[in-house]
Length: 554
Image (tube, rainbow, N blue to C red):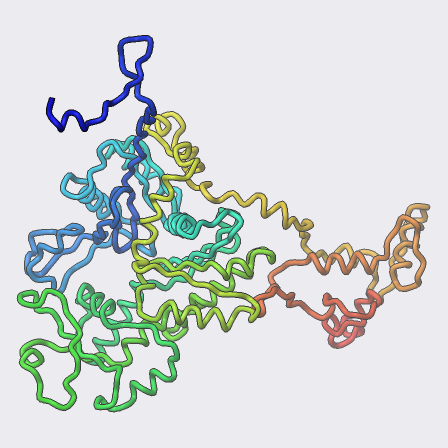
């Protein structure tokens, strides 16, 4: 025997009654994890990828036509193959955030679900839809995916749902921790509060300000001041992404922008692309003292000054361009104060920023400053923003797959054929939407419309009661009514009529309701307002109803 064979220890094995060897610690079989295709279908870009991917692919959700190649249409990511992207003509499938042109959306989906991008194969599909989506759009979406693409199973949800699930997973939050999601995208901005793990519908706010409005406004400013760029949407959108930022104090920035270029730190030169050497434009630092460089002489230079911070300022003050709408910060505060009182302070502790507009430098700091000034001082305000807020909602798809009720909410092709679209829509739309517990906790008495005639039937023009038929019941009614005029007589089972009137005042709601600050107040004539002192219900003494006295109406 060799020395090597002597040093080796003997391996002991257990043998069962049979002839086969049985391992000591058998390992459980591996259960394959669920793999799904997640599609964040935005109005300007589509974020698509499998749940196991770390980063999604961002593909333009549009069809483009270039002047240099008029016979070809560029669908989605095919725009990278275009030799000259100047003067691109866009065909967008969405209008105001909702799909309205299916002849554009269908080719884009055909392209991204092809073998070259992300084929569906046998994987379930998770696709996002905007809040308050129309029933007809939902029907068309289900029909295309189940009948055209023949997906094995489908699930529709909102991007804010995925962002909330991703945030709760990363920070290990329970359903008892409410969160506020601010989703600012291409067409609009939504503020969605989540209480007890569900959306609180009555507090959702929408601001019709998005990236499309900012790009169009920047085109107007540059076309008025320098070049005519009304047809250069693709280039100006890149200029907005590369140069614009959100300022902390608009007055200080305007004072800085008014200085001469030698001492101005805001002015930047942007080198426009020529699509031969320069594919995408870039910022060139100003050479204040030296001569112009060769690059500045050979290419077109776009000089930007206060446009850099004035354009994103529309997100916080839409009234700057004449829009009768509140800003994002004010809408967020409105949403918080529309929730139950016990959850308002907790909502300010978890605020999530999602969407392409959140990528502006300084957006998070400005949002914190605005909310800090509008919310009570004793509240703690915490704002979370991911490094890439554009794809943060898509990354929440992996958290969605780990929820315990995800498989039960999936709709298969068999369910679609048997149940129909109405039941499927109810299943999709009710996901994270059950707020019945909140309604039970905050139950209010039934509100009735204030009625004038019942109070005027028993009163004459001079405040005296009209004679009633000579019956015992009518006499009792008159005595009860007379007690309500301040005589102080009360029946055992009767109540003062003034208390009933006050109760009706408090429950009255009508077109005169207005909001002042963040609490609701009633705006009504003085005759219906509550006073500290008790008053007799005498209509003839009110100047609101009879400004010239009762004699003028006789």
